[in-house]
Length: 285
Image 1 (cartoon, helix red, strand yellow):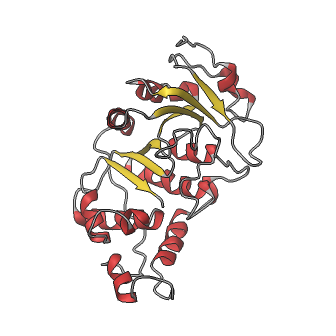
Image 2 (tube, one colour; image 1 turned 135 degrees about the vertical axis):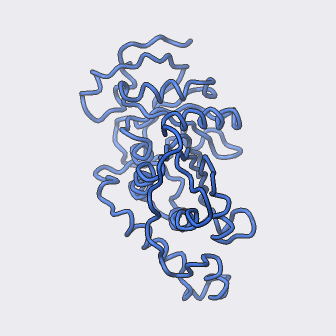
């Protein structure tokens, strides 16, 4: 049974690391759900509230609008194909105490990842050096630097609410998650999401990049799966020239988007698909 809430319920208060959460309010009714604790030394405090069933229509938007008062960031949650209990119900989450997105320099992170993924000296690489460099043309191994910021075409929060509802309709089995976080980028680090663990086991590194995209491109985190990430983008590139350096950042952040994405698997082809795109999606193998 859905309950009408004025003060923060006790189970949601537990999501916050400080007692100030008791002064927060949540007036949005929630469906049945429960809190989830992380695995392996993550502590006794739960890190996520997750609904029992699919997210009701419009609920993400109402919770997002109430975020200032509640301090709870909503997420649409997908699961591992064939196993709806993973990762959320099984607590496959590893929040790391003391790790913060603010500790990372975004350009250095992306440049280091770029250098690693464009390395042509790996003897086990299935691609020849020339083929490897062709994937990231016109840059090759040369990191192009951060893409410049762009003005949002509409208010990022309104844009996020619209596209969260579109995502919920397109994937109607997605459940609702709530995380105590000041912004969507921090939500991934707060829960210790492990979708990109084959590339980095420090989610605060991902959060640092997402923070930068929030500020430069009006990005908002709207959903997350077992190894997928869904973002709304209020300031997408308007042409290929703007899209190419953003595509380079995407490659450094998630090379599988290019390596295992739509063919042809090149940075230029991927950049062309970013032009005017209102959402970005990522998937790590």
